Length: 295
Image (cartoon, rainbow, N blue to C red; front, side, top):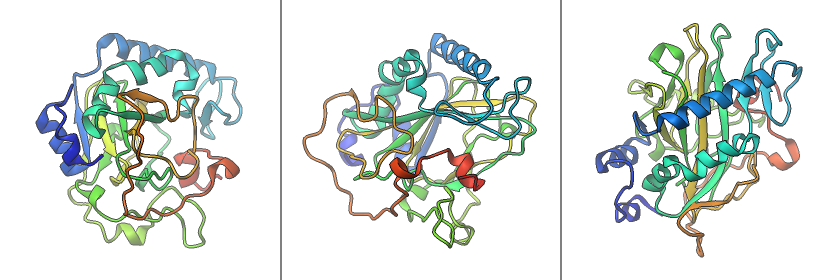
């Protein structure tokens, strides 16, 4: 489904101006859309899983942990396959206003793809280098988007997601090094061709929803505060988008229709996308693992 077709359907949650801003820039940040009860529940679940991670000594199917992780000082970089970790995460993804926001941006028929909860801890110096999402999980079109929810306030000094406006209309870059190994980031030589001067920090108070198109170039700086930055991330697409490679971190609900109806015809965008590794054979750690060459 194309933006012109999506525009024929009135938005349910976003304003028309917000939807147009997303189509123009490839991203959006909006405060005040997530009910307080949901925000409190997500934070409570996050704290429960951080506590549950304390005895973990190595990354597993649920937790991607950093090298400094210990029972006294948890360092969980990612809670994987979020909707498989607790039923309330799936309820939030499928039944809350979040799926309606997805429908405003990809069209009334919405398919769920994946989810995770990323943490950026203070004092670790962790950054996420420039990348696009779609090279890791290519689809037949470029409707897929990530909807993130900041669980706490996220000012500029906390390492918010940073996006380059209009980059969703530019090249889809190779996310491998010169030897062909997957890095999960754009090569420095390619980034040198991109005007980064207009990059925008997606800052916001707790509950802010951020939307990032799958082709948009984005990154994040290190967390310079004394507080952890948790952001829950949920990927959706139009129902007529079909993955043509295995998902890096599939869930029990990958492919489920959360709004509208399943597609009977695939929308095929002719723009080529580089082929990622076959994650079903190689396995997938996280972007943190790939960008630090821990695979």
